[in-house]
Length: 184
Image 1 (cartoon, rainbow, N blue to C red):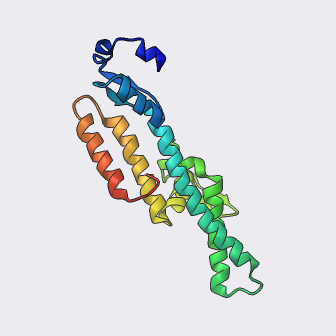
Image 2 (image 1 turned 90 degrees about the horizontal axis):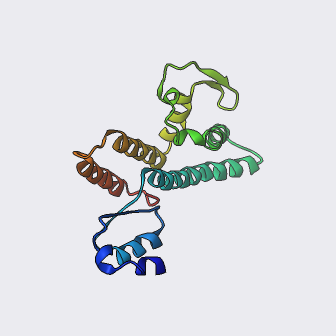
Image 3 (image 1 turned 60 degrees about the vertical axis):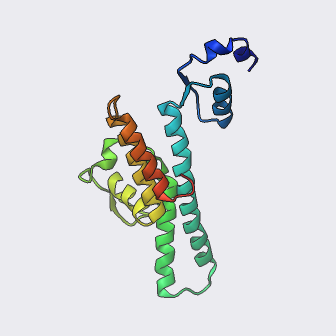
């Protein structure tokens, strides 16, 4: 801050935009040092922070399946329903653990349901990336919604320009606030 104090206040008041990563201290310092400036965070840091948030949702869901799996594995005698539940919990845990990278990818192969399917022994069926991603997110409403928000964020960055960015960011903020996902 000493450096910023060496710049006269009148000059600092003329700064229009200050860009930084999402560390709260930077925002506070920017507001003090550049009282008239707009605080901005670049695309990379927004996506990085969102990645942390969606990963937290994924881990919470994965841990839910892991706990259920461990509980059922410890039972000496299982009903037919419990055996099926154990298989399903194991599959979901596996998919969320092994294919977590898909939640963050924008690889077009992931979004193509017509890509070639290969047999996955753990999932006990033929799958392509599209199917696996669908399997991961469709069974948990919170993860499904978090993934939809990721799509909205990607769309914001790909479709916004000087003319529509304000309207688009306002809509995006509303979507995030309405999601009621605590991590978001």
